[in-house]
Image (cartoon, rainbow, N blue to C red; front, side, top):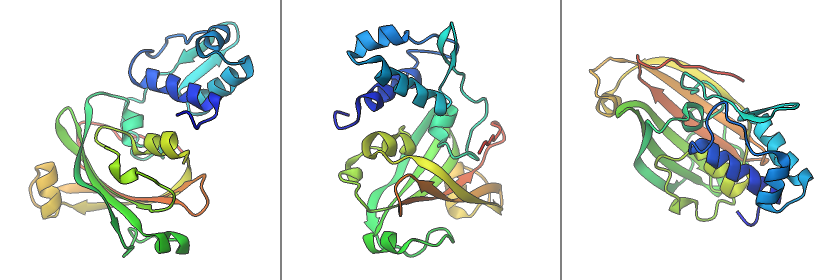
Length: 235
């Protein structure tokens, strides 16, 4: 992370510590003074890192108390613009790469129009199966424009958040998007992925996600089959 600004490096480190359980909901982070000493930076740098954590909903700051780690959602935030990994925040979520990232030409993007520069650059395509407590719950197909993503094909996205990887490695941040929701029945591929019978009801989401990089969108199609977990969403 040496190429990132200092406050971004601190933000990423604190975010990782919270995600890994070093700090749990309700815990206090070290004070600004302590963080300045830990990272050997000025207070303004620490404040910018903490402000970003507040903006992302990871901590809250109270005058006279300090920075308090927030709890994780009870449901699975598949309807939000967070990824399922970040929304769940649980080690019980595992990811199997069913098709490793590969370069393709754009044929379609789940009914969404592809920007001309994205189409010209080509597509990075991959598929993943997500399991909660060992039970398959999500099957997602993702397409990214092959624009300024050096070494992306070499990253192991198993058990890692795509959004976190794009943010930490390429400074690509999700800013909004649009999604379409359908109720479908399981075809042969989904029957095998979810271990369900023919015709089992499946939730399908088609998403075109905007980012802070002009002309760069994340296109995904997510299939969901669960009766155990609630689906939550905030925008």
